Image (tube, rainbow, N blue to C red):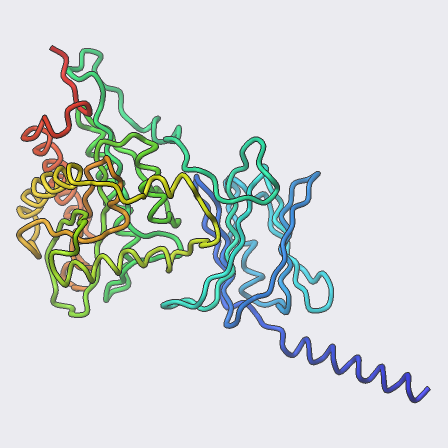
Length: 406
């Protein structure tokens, strides 16, 4: 009897010890997008987990070991929007002692990608659950899907062109709003986030480009969600884009830094220390935004192989100069020439690509202007004029992309 009592006391002690070590999540975030939905579970320590799929109905189950209920986990279901393309409902509850179960009721078959991220910048340990649309013949658990073709929404928002147009086809401009989702980009003194400003500018730029007789634009990111840098390139190529423009509003260590800049890719190092620093900062976006490094994507690897890009870079420099000249009429230029560095997002081997730093969000005066709709319009008008100048001045550098009827 005494022996049994001692065993019971020991068992209770072990259970108490297990629960004492249980941790609460510090934050949960849900990021829906047309391409995939992401759930981020953040904690002060790494979260041990297991996951599996169930059918009839379709569900993804994630068991969080050593996690207990708390405000952050309780708030996750409230973040779900009815129009989320993949998740119908979220349920959370204790499955067994020491295990909290997260159940995602699905609207459609998905390919889950679940992985951990180490602490970085403002974030602690993150457990990421990405839900990608399943394709025919997919296994239950697979790597992320290939980039989608232009969405119906993008096609629907392109205004109709006159039937007697002088052009055999439209110029397609891929407009890339920098950062997004888990990656806020730079922050201003008054609380502005780069990802919000770049999206506002990208949407206005699409609207202005679509208003041109011979052009239309497609947004690489049209919402607050993260797109890996390589996938931005892949999406632009899948769209058969004629130009790629990545829009940014960076910060610097000095609040008095100001002015606009334009960058192109470099194969042989950066043109300045500042350009090298900025390229490294922008390339770190994948670390902050969160990429599953265990996923091997052969299509992406083929796209980003180190090809000779001399002709494309020359076209990029010409485009950059045309845009920089026009922007100079709206804002002070940080540098009077197009700079170059190894920006990952500019590595499409066959698309003239530039990165536009619209202004320094870390400068309070420029931050205020970047949030001003009137100033945004002027900046976007200047960029569009630069694009038009590029095609007017260099028709042979974009020959098959723009063909006029006789």
